[in-house]
Image 1 (cartoon, rainbow, N blue to C red):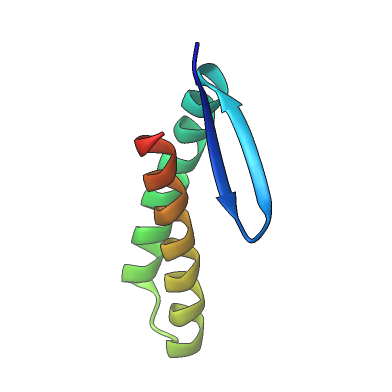
Image 2: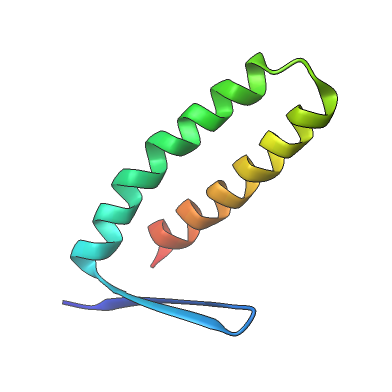
Amino acid sequence: MSAASTMSSGVTLTLNEDERTLLLAILEPVLRDKEIEVHRTEAPTYREYVERQEAVLQKLVDKLRSA
């Protein structure tokens, strides 16, 4: 079983395949919910905040998928 490592800003996280799969299973629905929230949000300031959260979640999901 291979491990996935992610390094950013001096932080390294090593996950085995089961952990990576579980984390993806948790994050992907949250990302979908964030996409819906962005679409439904009208307040510009809050919408920007939600869009930043969505971008971070998307990067995390992309990193985990490519590991």
